[in-house]
Image 1: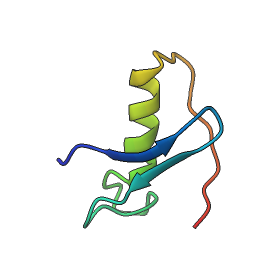
Image 2: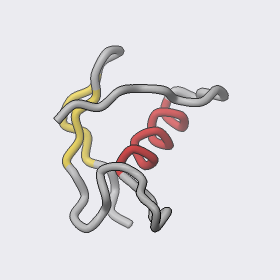
Image 3: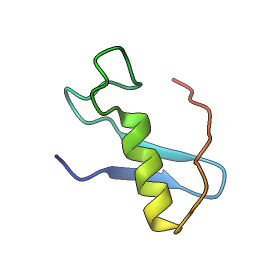
Length: 58
């Protein structure tokens, strides 16, 4: 899988480049989604032990 390309990030917003052929959000196929990739990135970077919760905007 490609590395997540972060365009901008601060404590209120994260902007990333969407990886081709990866759904933006989960669906019935249960394939990995951009939301899950971003959540994993944030959990790892900031060593979060709790669930990442955020909203999306297009």
